[in-house]
Length: 307
Image (cartoon, rainbow, N blue to C red; front, top):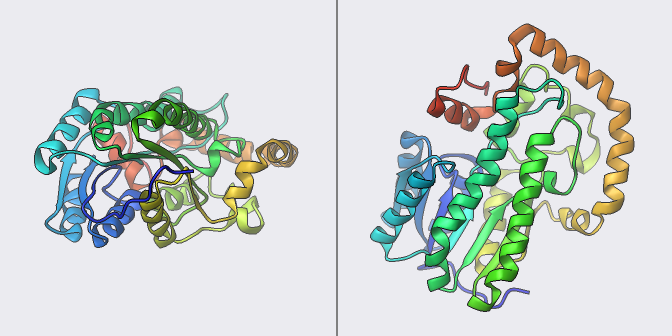
């Protein structure tokens, strides 16, 4: 259980991946509740726009979370502007899909670098300030940290990694008055999910998932859940609520996914291979959505992702 409950108003919250999607929506909701926002991301125009919507108690810092010096500079800038940091939301992330034998290796490794190493570098840089204020760290993982589906090896590995990282950190800092939470979100209406649905070779993957697990949930639900999670210093933040059951049932779920996946893999793999033959492995494996395109553009890495 969280050690304390603390109103959002007046807290300084640093959010990575804040230019769009989950990061932007959560930042706006937190600002509406009186938080001071330090927004970190790659797209200056988008960050400035989000900061403007968050009001005068918001600042933005352009930084690639995989660049230790850049993220340290962003943290230092936030501390200089606001006097400290109460909460870190390690949200920055990208995604791609493909089989282990066919995916572009650079794309696979970049997903892990952004999602896992980027989170580590963010938390490492900000942690002394969070400890000073006996604050809260929220690591944004995913249902993919629990349910490991075929063709999502990079994303699942990275999100399982950040879950494990946060679980270790929680125990390490509890005696210092710091709480650590992990956010598990299903398919959310973001440019990342839309980009994956639009990508040639990936378009049919989610259509094969039936029931609530295949449903897309509104971004507003996530913003509400994150805000409540920060206030409650929650161990788990989930959207939708049934994800909590998956956390408890992850053993049997893994067996079920394996059985279902084996039946679907051949058709999906054929579709992905057709896309690679048509576009090349680098283009077909590039991170999806506008956020993925921003990451590719920042590194000058090949063709930008669709979406």
